[in-house]
Amino acid sequence: MKLWGNRDNPAVSSVTVRPSIEAGHTVRVITVEMMPFADIIGPKQVVGFIKIDGENFELEVLRGSRRILSTNRPVVVFESTRALLPPIIEMYSSSGLVVTTVDAALAGTTAQDDELLKGDNGTGEYHFVALDPERQQIRQTK
Amino acid sequence: MLHEELLLRRTFVHLVDVAPEILLPRSVAKSRSYDRKTTDISRRGLRDDSTRIDAGADLGVISTKLQRAAPRATGMRSNPSLSMLPVADPVFLRS
Image (tube, rainbow over all chains, first blue to last red):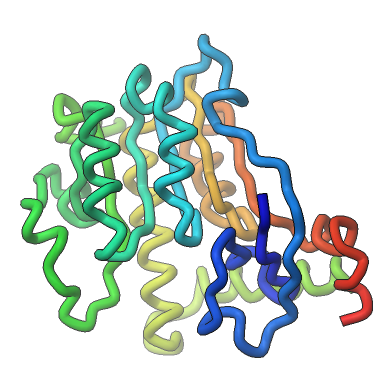
């Protein structure tokens, strides 16, 4: 697959063209091999936590992690624009996870769908948490 | 050159981590807050015998914090790297 590699800041390299982010940077299209996480993680490994910063590729990362999500029910912190959120929520839901905001997860509560999807009122908030509803009260450590 | 850039970026991230919030631009303070909340969530949910995945790890700042939070957990992280890009496309070297 094609990757728009950003030489100045590799972390914002993306599989989609993003002129506003790429402006003024050295960007080249390179071909990379794609491999789903589920093929890298062994069936006996238990995944407890995932952080996804996929630069608009979140849905594809989730598709490649479906087995892990369904069987391990990890806590997932992820980034998403509001526009991409509905299919992402649906993907998590089909794996038995619920989506909430970072602050609500830390408080042990769940944000309602309309709260997730409403405008950000200028806060720029676009990070969310998916977790097993049975573990909604995230386990407290000692 | 690549190592110097990496070192500079890591130094910047470290300074941001310890700087008083009042000195930070809003966007940087917001990013730091997100990093800390992410680590806090992982600290509460991650067990020592489990695996953590950091997909889009950038410099690995959060990964390092996650490792400190659960040192015996297995960690995996992925990110396009500075060193990979010139190898994948030599045109980078001439840009």
